[in-house]
Length: 632
Ligand code: PRX
Image (cartoon, rainbow, N blue to C red; front, side, top):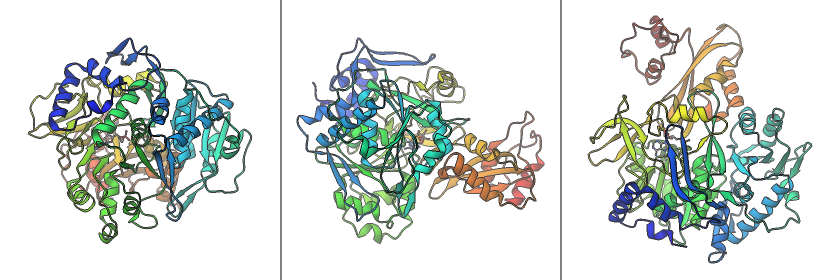
């Protein structure tokens, strides 16, 4: 097997050379990268694709199992190295170091447990768990036997969980009795109980005892610790076709129900691993910490798969940055001598608001590389991060990508290519971004703004939306035929560095979470006293963006506290992360003559604009703008 390190750039010249190779002859390039992995059978063809269908097939005819690459492959030479370093919510509890050998053992045991529940290749398994090592074990155990994991972030409500379970008809649910988040103890089991009332496809539920609460176990529900007793730790890895499904991960869209993005085995393996090594420049003995939750794509690709494929030590943190106080992240950096720290701008902004003594009291000298993900980082936050955390000596990789892309697409490579505040900078090797004008024509000049699109496939592009290929085509491949359209705008500087300007659709990134406004409106409209609502995003100091809901009520004089009820309704339907910052009761919404809500105007109002609304004379009800403003 060839060594992947030979293809990881160490200098700017290396990057330029490898980048050229990857776009001049992508198939030869990716074939070389693929040869550094363990395959059960080699491919007949590297890539076939059609942007119109759309269809992407990487390494057709090849077979593999990703867990052999994450685990078995490392057993020969780094069996005792820590794979997962677990830091619990409570700083007084011991952290746990799980070696590659031990992780392999636990994964094989749990894979056998899943088999005993009749789970076979292709079956879907829902995972709704806190950030504890068993979550990683669950993910990899599914992959070991070819089951498709669908991890649902454990902050989602019972309705959201049920919708996701039902959409992909999961057969088994893996969960916990509860979770610790800062000073709160969250009763996951009762959320699960409520969800399962609406889920016929679940045949068994396995519950991890995390908070040791006295929960009621229903039929077909068993305890994790009982299930793993006396189970063999030998489990042959299932032979998976390169294009077989590895996982489904739901992301919200600008309309209706969440989209179950489907990722496949071969391409995702190669891209998550190669990007991890390129972007972070991870070296043996480094301690890498990504603060995301495995319920999001960042956790999938850069806590679990990318680092483990690279034989790295990946930190999993159960808690929150504010517990027991706002120095927790920096305590952890000192305690575990973290070398790589990857977080979201919203966390940086929140931490920067607290006394700098909370940072200074910790030794951060182990840090070599910093990263950000999930939303644009403003210059002030970038400078704070660079000066106070990186001590002006750590490169900062600002990584732009999506659930749909599976891995990082635009970024600097730590210490190899230049970073620039607020710019995601350059394409990852193998990625061909372009800016399009509104008519869909490529903008060739630099220092221009446009719609970001990608004009050539990469190995980990999502293959479809589970059960809805038409929607996949409509959302990503129809507006600009021949390109992948991510839904973001961008601009370039004179050197061709990219800066993301934000979403160009009705998705708002709040605290780094991708939230479609339509599902939130649907949730609000469920309330019997609501006639109609519109939700828009507006700039917010810490969260990046916040949501403001404009709501028309049936009875404005009713005694109930509608703002409170609306928030509860949203928490129940989606989850607390989707609660608007501001709810404004309005007499009407600005509409076009065809009845479409003019969100552009609402966005301006939400951003504090008082008079500059452009031409509103074509509205059906121009007077409403004033009325909304008076009340705001
Ligand atoms: O708008 C972009 C924003 O997050 C969106 C993707 O969200 P999600 O699928 O939840 O994945 C988040 C983690 C990869 C993008 O369409 N986004 C992500 N990273 C950045 C970003 N916006 C600006 N800069 C980034 N570095």
